[in-house]
Image (cartoon, rainbow, N blue to C red; front, side, top):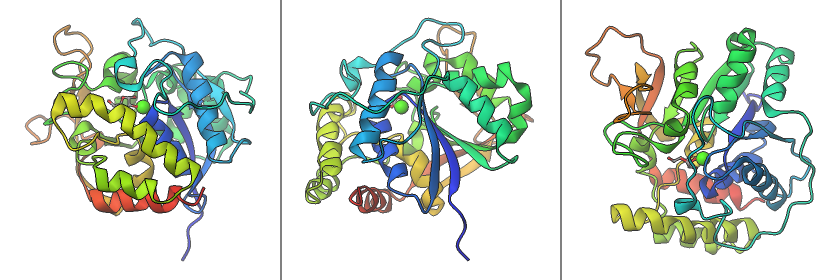
Length: 315
Ligand code: RIB
Ligand code: CA
């Protein structure tokens, strides 16, 4: 029995890994119906993330995709960006053409609210690839939409793998910890892809060579983006390639069996300067705090990259 594609909104801060996730989603219409892409400030400022989202849609040959611009800064803190990883454009590596497709006039937060109100309850999944500012702002402005959300699948957090922007915090959570706290306390079913799992999805040479062998422009861009942004992780971790964080979110919707984790309680540190943005995961169940997230810890990395290459080669 074939199921209809899952309706998703991709909230994102492109970012090369976000870009690969967007390509995977747009290449998989039988699995996901991309209602829209909503940009948020994160890896680079908002004027670049909204532009990059449109660049990627055009690269995918989908210029009719609805792209909205959202929050330009976190709920209560100044924006922290990651040009040291993604370059000053956020999509450094290859030279990308300026986008010609339109940016939607409506604010992304209003689009998210209106869409959740309009669609039947439990039919829209929020795929969050950056700081949770847009989502938390929508929940604060319109609490009635919280119960309308089918599920939130997000890239963010870390526990055993510890932090990548501070010793204890992962970037997406660290940039807007207050937003993360709101989302993790919302009661919406959450599937999280922390560094614990994304660091097992490394862009090794054979995996990137498989993209190069396809010979299409989208696959060439994946290889060139990877060549650029993996230098940070290779230098820092001495790893064989870079973790391809954000595509884990979309791959989960297409082939959930690629991933394994545990439904546990996860709380967000918002007051300590030392551990701000830490996702405190009760992995061993030592508290009576209610489980609120499926914390993914393992991935079939070969299966993940085979899916990525197979799907993105369609574009
Ligand atoms: O920590 C990795 C996350 O931060 C990824 O989503 C990357 O794109 C950046 O947003
Ligand atoms: Ca991201």
